[in-house]
Image (tube, rainbow, N blue to C red):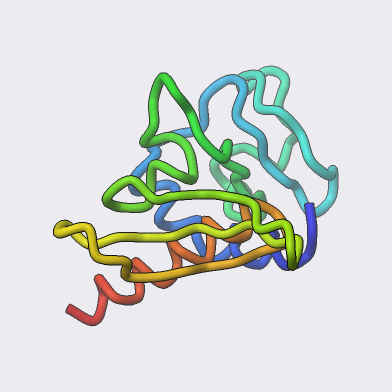
Length: 130
């Protein structure tokens, strides 16, 4: 995980909790003291993943979840975003659209997760302004 992606995921933690619910077995998280881990239930989690210190840990969602789209990062973007790799500048691109299929944003990143995280952050900022 890059420092840039960790920054975005840290900023998105309240949204992840609101829209994705609780951690489930198989979810990944990053503990500042223990590193990146997979959540295997409370019996197997690091001590920092429990309720009193859980805010120290950063939830790392999957890029997409085909079974439960709302539990993946792509599922947080409204109106089915488009994600593709642009070869000439080696960037991932996430395009977002309005309800009437007009492009509302073009977000790039060195990884698909960064491009989509940028789209989610801007989308939430726009929603907060309305």
